[in-house]
Image (cartoon, rainbow, N blue to C red; front, top):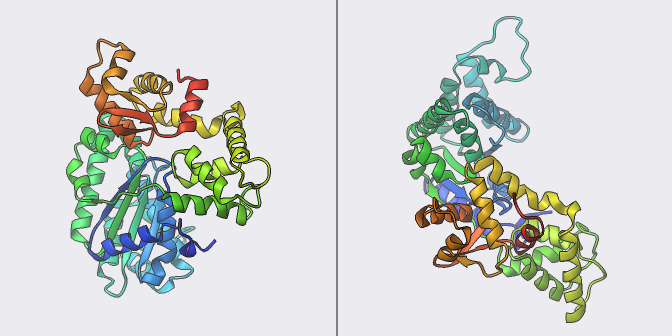
Length: 383
């Protein structure tokens, strides 16, 4: 679909981000999983040429070290070869002038031989060429940077040092080549990583751009479009059904709206009683064991990225029994752990808010963000 014509196409966000790029801002776009951060990066890539920018997007969640980061950046730069040949060739030609492969060497790509040499120097050269291309404007869209940094942290003290050196090196490149814009995203807590690795200063140089969930009107439009464009088994979802579905979903993120809508039974109806039955049937289906993968991903997320995941499980199991959440003091008493102090609990709860598991509905009152996730954890408690 051409998302530029859609209310839920994140077009306002794209316009705002390009405006911030024009103001020489580098951006950090943190947010919970499934909020739509990658979708926004895709739209930035699509609209870049019309706005006279070159956007290079790369997902670094699978990178294990800084050299793989550089490799990924080179691969995604290579993707510009098809429709932005002139800008691409300018960069590649500069690299070829700096380094020529040995005679007879076989190479599958222009950058393969560079990986055997000083990746830092070559990354700097890439940024320098982007900066000096006065008729071209470049932006690097780095998706899931915290997951990459967490992989480094998990290596121990050496990994912490590697993460700190990497972030300080990136910060140095940003200062030396200010015409190149950066946008980083992350679905796990960036700030705790920066504190642990002592590179908070480098992170603080990024301007935070808050990505919000869809508005109710956008969510309703999205749900009805799923049916109109044959994305689900229904060919139509009435306005009344769409509004009820959005409210039942509880979090206006496209992923979960799509998941909910795809399970809607029967045929379209405007009858309130019939709509209530459809929503109840949909909710029942989503709570079945075969739907586990959609909800257990949050448990996997905690096990991978939260060193105190057992404490998180205790909090979430307690909160699952309370639709409107609990005050931190009540939760603390419910947990009944003499070693757990309130400041530590609040820090943990706020971290889970950043990850999208919880939200703070009132001062020091926390609730599970997704109603269906709450029901799932009631049915299948975390252990």
